[in-house]
Length: 194
Image (cartoon, rainbow, N blue to C red; front, side):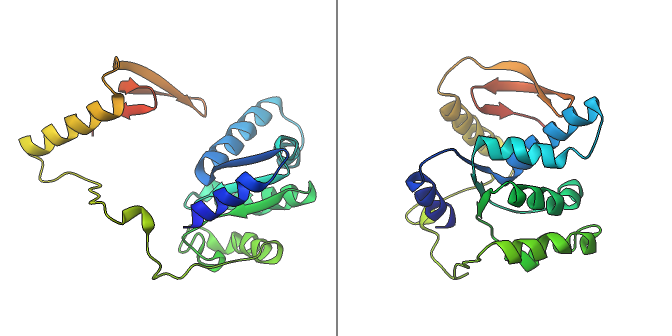
């Protein structure tokens, strides 16, 4: 329901806007930070916030969930800079602001970010007992077990369905200056072993 409501809102707003998953957004921020640090100079966050604001004054972030210490340590300054640029922030989250980054490393340093969110955003909590409409009428299996021949066949069938019979190739994914070998990929689907 949360994402659906945000998406309805997003669809009704005209003009420059951005809608993305929170973790994708933070990966992009870290990528921009990495590029700015190579150039050197002053604190790059205000410049990055200006770039984001130029892409859209409305920023919708789905699944706002802070689990990474690097994200936690820059969020207050980033949010302040975005607010100063006139960006309106709309997010969904499975946690209320006070529960963000709960038990995280150096959490006291993150508390000012929570205070800023509570000061600049309105919180509309959904009832925890609400129906999850995505699951109605569907049997959803998020993992296959036990690890046997039947599970292997089921996994192969799911992988084949996702790749639609297209050519599967090995590849390399580049992210934040790192190269990651992808044994099997096709379109937006990748397969890794453990």
